[in-house]
Length: 385
Image 1 (tube, rainbow, N blue to C red):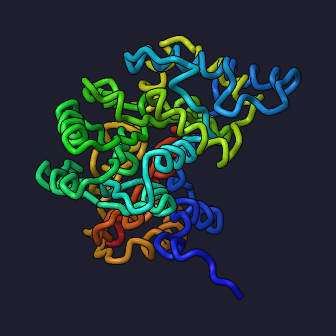
Image 2 (image 1 turned 60 degrees about the vertical axis):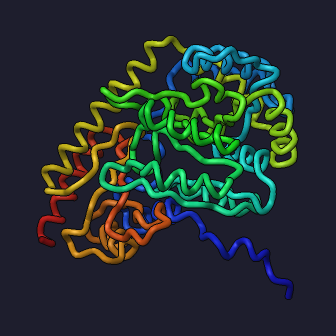
């Protein structure tokens, strides 16, 4: 019997999705896979119903319907401060997962190197390997998840083709400061590297922190491949609508990769999502306020349970330190916690290149009632002390 490709030996199936299966097995509260409880805004759902009734039902233009691209360009011009051309600067993808894969395959040749901050969202290592490139991991040091400029420079000295930047960060909740982004940008320019961004949590940032687009820094648009999606901003993770924003020459290549990966994103969903992209600016203020309230509630639950954690600056994840329980196998601990405590988390080791086995990731994109119930269950952990 023929053997499957060797590259598959270098990464595992998704631990995040595995923990959802564990949550279902034990009827635990699922704080592992980060999809929201809430539905998309009502006007977006109404637009979806109209699109199902009236179409379009056939293929959209491969790189995205014109109405969707025009709406996205309008929105992102405001937030990014860039004069984006919907015909030249945008490819619509099947979620940010495909956007990142498209970006990686557009930027990198087999044998190239790619810098990845650790901890990292689990797809990045797999994307790099599937593209035939080699990852260079640079640690973000807990508990604050800051990088060491000398360590980052040493990584760039290996002449990588690109660096992956998740901002705000999954899993750590870190929001990179303007000073940190400037350091990254200066190194990318000095060593002539691309910056591939994952900015799906761009609108979930907690005061006093601010999200800055590295593509908008001086001389950076030309070398930045910005990836994001509508999933988290509009509570539509199942709609699978993402995008790549980049200069025209890069987009010309990305269109070819995207075309042969998926052909195109769902046409009726693109039509409906125009309504989401055209929502008034007040929507984003409400989104921030809602997540700030949930974050504060959930952190209060962690405090009541006596848990140690890093306060997230953005996104909706919390890294919790379980070392006080004598945890040396975070995978086993997470399975035990799902079964005995009734709360499902993701073992932190799945996000780290380094041997880190004492952290777990919880998300708080759930209803306030479920977060309160989670707090009650987490108090069971006190008996382990």
